[in-house]
Length: 103
Image (tube, rainbow, N blue to C red; front, side):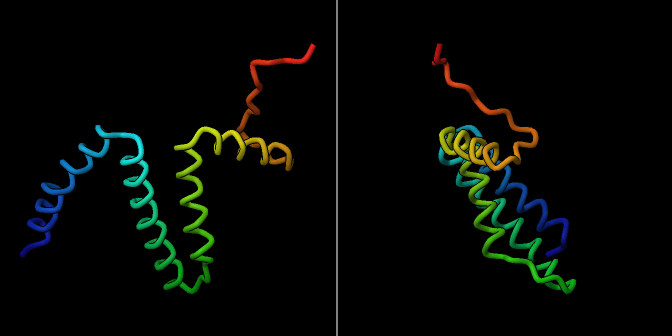
């Protein structure tokens, strides 16, 4: 089987699945994005290791999962931004203010 045939076969199977997951949204989309980022990070760490680097694979994969969860869960996102702000590393983040203000 040629490389082009493999690519067309993969696209014929993968594209409908990706479209379905995007349309379903919610937790299904989170699982898909988390799996895709896990595979991409793992491949990156394998390439980096082959070039002589010593990446912290477990920590990096856990951080990647945490980032995915942060985008999915709004409370976790707010807590993460608040912690980073309190540590003095707010970067591009704005601290969300509650609608209740003390007088």
